[in-house]
Image (tube, rainbow, N blue to C red; front, side, top):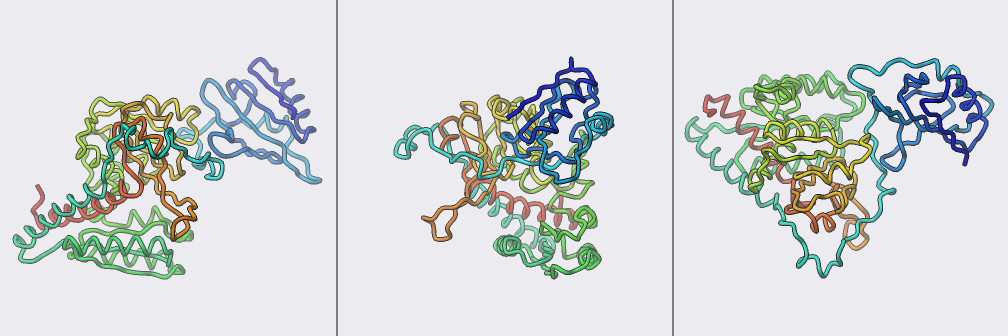
Length: 424
């Protein structure tokens, strides 16, 4: 393999010659180090005739920092057409936008991840594990009991009125249908009235918006949940924003997220899974104030709001994402780790600081011929390895999952109490 290295000392003319030499070598790779402005290189440049290696961290995705840039690309087979010339490539160099490049969140493919191995063999696990298991199922059951008791009091004070949750399902995805059934079952167990509207996959955006408006106008509905994902032809942001902010029990309305991000503001609702993570820490007597917390993942659903919540609890927060060059090193400094990337066993035992508390949000199916279904669910954290280092950890399943539904019920109850003038 031919490897060409362009440094800050490389002249523009020299850069062009090297790029032209690179283009003539089918197995060549090029790495440019230095500020992209030095040679006119553009971060994440769409270069015809070249393919960027993707994946993290083994793939080496294209990324430029302010002080040290590193762009890696490979020429691909382009048939009779020629790739973009070196001079054209170097000449196209707009500055990055203020809010950064809108690049996809790409983590390692599951096939590329080494199998999770226990540091000690299974027979020694129980005697050598340092970690207490945070039983999310047990804590969620306790919260549900508290909610059921509050609903009983609510009924007596309002002449029999109860909270109401409406779930809008579009399409027939099996996983979404399962989630909706579990939410309706949970509502019934605590005394929340559930409403549902199932729409066909082919429904229009206007059809969904009409259903949302119907529930917005219904005084017996205190929470509206849009089951995600929506079909690709629908504008998810527009539909979520159509939910009344007073009924946004999922916590994704722009006003609720915006207030969560601002000091001195209080959102009506907090997203259920991040809230569940914090509730697990608080109910396990984990002191968050002053601790260094690392959130692995920056999704709108979990990672970003979880980081905001930790900051509100006075933690110093670092977010690790697919472009973080040294995720293991960063995570090793964390007192609290929240992993939410959806990659099985990404976080290994050597990522964990001794005594850290680990909240594993990931739910990933992996093949397991020994089970009836042919697969089992695992988290983003290699549980066996992490147990040797952490002081406490959530299992998968039975950790964060039950808390998400418990927080949805809690948000719905809070909405009903506000509607009936009984909020604290």
